[in-house]
Image 1 (cartoon, one colour):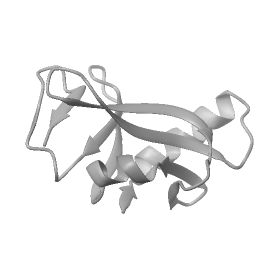
Image 2 (image 1 turned 180 degrees about the horizontal axis):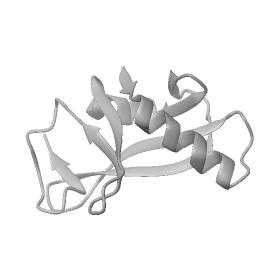
Image 3 (image 1 turned 90 degrees about the horizontal axis):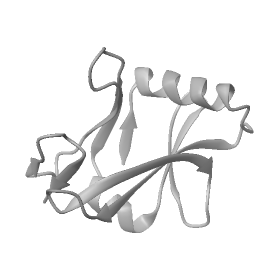
Image 4 (image 1 turned 60 degrees about the horizontal axis):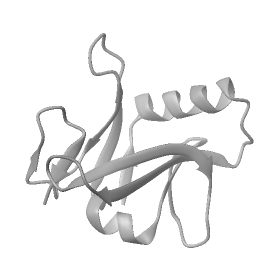
Length: 107
């Protein structure tokens, strides 16, 4: 499961509207090996793929493939709109540490 906050949902909707994407699209989140701490998040706008887990807040949708869900299950995705470090933020209870820049994590 992944919880999509209201702020993250609003940002997903605004990004999709700005790019004039179809209604069925959303934010795709994946986990790959790499970064300073061993794993890193990959995010892009796109359509649902076969086998994806779909999490919603209103009309905003987040797609996560089954393998990546093993790493982020139980997480919360939020959006930080501050002057520094603006962007989507994943609060992952399975993470045991992050790198200094916050772009990668360890388990």
